[in-house]
Structure formats: C-alpha cells, structure tokens
Image (cartoon, rainbow, N blue to C red; front, side, top):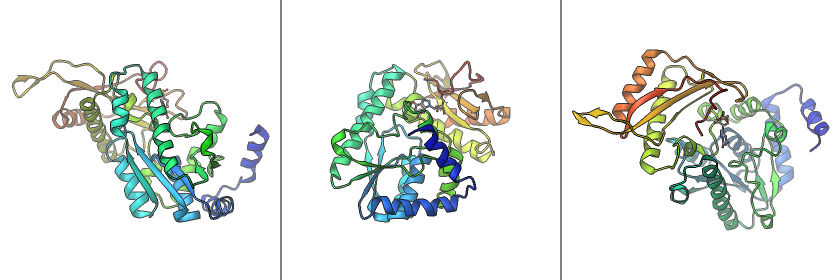
Length: 325
Ligand code: XMP
C-alpha cells in the first residue's frame, strides 16, 4: 500500500459519519464476499469485535467466528464474547478452550520474549486447526486498523493471524483498515455493541501471560485474575474506568512473609499499575485517592487466596514501560 493511496482514502471521508461508514462497508462487504463464507478470529478486543459486528450485519450466517481462549484472558472476557456474539447477535461462533495447551507449553518458561513467542505461535496453530475444519471457507476477516498499516512490519503478533500457512489460501477481508481507534469505537457504537466492549482498555495479545511475571503457574495466574477483577470492579464503581487509560495488576514470582489468622502466611504481592497516555510511548501515573487504594488493598488481601500485600507502581514511562514484561 503506497503512502499516497492511504492518504487519499482517508481524505475521501473528511465528513466522518460512523453510520454512513457502516452502510458503505456493508455494501462493500456484500460485494466482496457474495455468497461465500468468512472466517474470523474473535478475541473480544475492540477491533475484531467491530469487524464481527459489521460482518454479521453484512452477511449474517456466512460469517464463522472462532474464539480461542488461551487461558490468559481476564475474568469474564470469554463469557462476554459468547454472550454478546452468540447469544445476542446470533453469530456462528466456535469456542475453543485451549487453556491447557497454552499453559502446558508455558510451564517453566520465565523469559518474557519467549513467553510471547510461545503464545503467538500456539495461537496461530490452534487457529490453523480450526481453519482446516472449515476448508470450504475462502475469506479471512481481520481487525487490521490504520495504525497497524502505518507501523507495518510491527504486526500485532497475537491478533493478526497473517502467519497462517499459504496453502490455506484465504482472501483477506479488512473492513476497518483505514480507521483510527477512536473511529473504530464510534463504528462499534453505531453497530450497537455494548459500551464496555467498545471502550475496553487496551489489552496485550499475550494477555495475563505478561502480567503473571516469570514462569506462569496456574495458582498464581488465578490469583492475578481475581485481583485484576477486583481492581476493575472498583475502578468502575468509583468513576475511574473511563478516566484512566490502562489499569491492571501484575503478580511477580516471589513471596513475602505475612500473617493471617495468627499464622505465618507466605504469599505473593499484587502490584497495581494505572497509567494515562495518548500513544503508549510515554505514560503518567494516575493519582488514585488513598482511601480507594486502602479499600482495594483490603478487598484483594481478604478475597484473593495467595496474595498478602498490595503495592502501587508510581513509575512513569519512561523509565518504566507500561507492562512489567
Ligand atoms: P509497554 O509495556 O511497551 O506497552 O509500555 C505499551 C502498550 O502496548 C501494550 N503491549 C502489548 N500489546 N502485545 C500486544 O498486543 C504485546 O506483546 C504487548 N506488550 C505491551 C501494553 O499493554 C500497552 O498498552
């Protein structure tokens, strides 16, 4: 794609109107796909969700979605994908619980980049197996967006399934590839997707895998998922969810001494990270009221088995990256 070409496409729609975009794309998708079938890896992220909703509107049951649960999703996320797309929007959706495959492969692996490679590689393999079950499908839809094209070469290794073997021979369908993220969200709202899905905070492809620091174990991953769910619930309740760009828990692979019910209680710390940024290149730390921090600490340490301390990461980017790995 030449620079000129992408520029002119954006200029053509200076009077941006998400509803008109939906109409245009529905017509274009029907034209491209005809009576063929389309396969889509639906992660539950904003981009793939909007592509799914567009395709459901355009070609309905000609769309086959596959949701791969790699076991590194946040609490309730896979369930939300199923309830929104299968139950409410009536999509054809295969749910693949690949938790054991991913966690078995990751066992004992502490290096962050190797963890990313394993997660990305295994995702492609699971998706390829699903794709081969639908060998009659000719089209592959992807949630590529404009910044992905600008950063070409830096393909999102997890969400983008461009690593599939050539012999599958898919024709790509990329209806939102000229949109910026805020435009994608507007299209999502125009399509009637729930706000919590449209305004979902960015979530790395490798998911909780890069927040369960070092070698992942199931018990520590569960503690992380539960603590993260409490943080999200408290941010929602206290009006911070819409205000803070990204917030999550990281759990390091170390224990400290604690005391519970009069007995020694060795457990992990939960580290809160809550940052604001516009481009993720630099980030500032959100000032969370102390009272709320105390409340979150009390909830996590009393409700989550295996956590005995809560820490707040005060480090801006640079010097600290947003994720811990
Ligand atoms: P860092 O940690 O580099 O993160 O400051 C910047 C933004 O990128 C996200 N991130 C990832 N996203 N795959 C992804 O899809 C990854 O491997 C990955 N690592 C970091 C991070 O959550 C933040 O929004």
